[in-house]
Image (tube, rainbow, N blue to C red; front, side, top):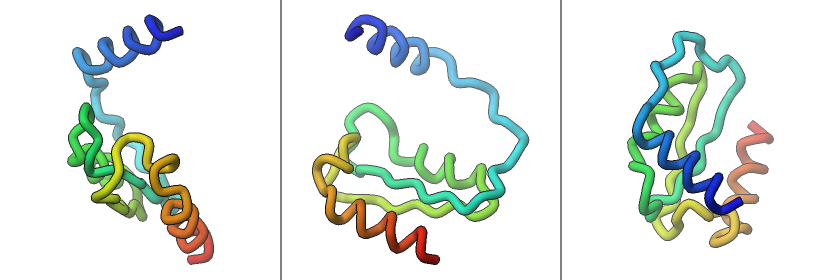
Length: 84
């Protein structure tokens, strides 16, 4: 399983797919850990830009595993977003 996961990430790093032209129409919240060591945080805004109503919430004190590192803060932000 570990080999498959690593190969998937290696393949993704070599070839980025062509951007899609369709836009996401549902309100979308992108949660991102600023300490993510492998993915550039600009990708959070690139993702949100593909949405009609895309918002980014950056966690300065988190990595890729922000839902484990700050579960209460993440849950509060998701509940707030869903209530909007």
